[in-house]
Image (cartoon, rainbow over all chains, first blue to last red; front, side, top):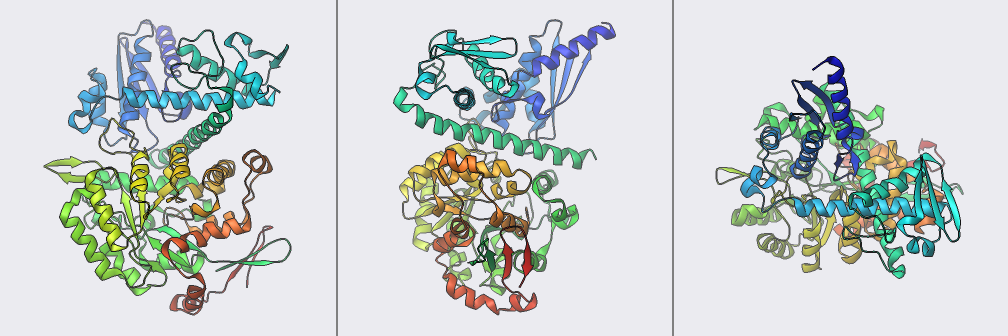
Length: 250
Length: 369
């Protein structure tokens, strides 16, 4: 493999990692600073990962590392992936299990009662609600009323370059501001991952259920708490990671 | 005591009770399992550095162990705190004498029973021996009627068990319920759950506050003061606290956002005021994680941005701040603020530090009176 191939593979691996989110924060692990290094030797991609504290919950760490491993495995040209977690109280145990292809319950045995699929689902649902709130408040900012929002179809929202076009109430709104457009596309990309291509824009759970219009306000108040919680936690994790790196690698 | 002076020149007396303080011992001689003991205090130190104003950052060695005199000076001498509650975190799997064992902190409260409010802790995994210990603590350490009214419940505590390690417990187990019944009998009415990262079983969310919900519903006569407002699960905390009126928001950790991340702090206050209202929010510095002085001063001067007041329909008035800083805790611990004001005006600590009510002008200035 040439140096150029290495460079391309490393870039592809990093791009793949940017699709992996911390389930407790709903932000890419690459943005959070958890990916410390990606290196390649003989088609083996090694990824060094750190967490913001020594104590981060093993179950969520496990989900992140599994997703990271699988995301890189899907990159063409990758033969083997080695994930290396450092500075965590269970690092040795987790590294061995992740690289040995074990499931969470195989890794933890009697310390867990079951697998983490249910937990994962709960947090994906939170992520959906958090993104829903981001999308809904952005729509409101552009004059979309609650009644209009609840009746919008996925078809009514179109991406055009970096802009989002919304067909609502007989007019077409253009959302050009990158952060505003970003909040809408973040929600849309979640629906796309769920495999939803048509139907109502506003959904509330992973089954694609839409709320009744009378329930929307209360749903949005609750999802505001979820979105705030994610944002607050992400900010705390960033601050802790910075402190930690200052201390460990001055 | 603080005299908070509003723009109209009116001075508002504020009595400060800090519901969450430690005098810990994380010195190297006390490390039992060095990796874990160091990992614990390093993480605390990262929190301390991440959110403290630069002038308040300690060096690492001081942080390991600062002792009684330093704590008295920081809390009461300089920090505007009138009374400080101990929330002991034992951690005997990490530290030889424990991190903040109640038997180690008890003499501090005995020496200053009107300043330090003695509290204990319990853990259902300790069974009958744990129950006896709790009874003994009540018998020995209730030097004032408001002592031994709170128990810190660190649910992620590690403990040696059957040759291995048990990494935590839940509040909704039958064993925990037996302890809650005993707490009721002993008059330990304030339960202070604190969620940490590793709680058995590991396939569940360690930070889930669902067990607090179950316990609070089953024990309506006990109060559940949830430390760091259920963070990182503020959304779930807000939801259970809306339903169970005996759940309170303990502001340790969350308060520290006020300095470097005021917008997050503002949104958090808006969330809490919206879901819980002003009567169930309780100030805590988590000293020595953070120094109370800057937190209290910044809280007094803090104004909720207009957009949040409008969106949430809430406000953060000086009356609400007074409740958060002292009155809400006084109700929980049945502390008579009027009586304590008189008592503390001339106690040995007031004399030692020549304490006078600090005048804090809410428009920014501050002058000692």
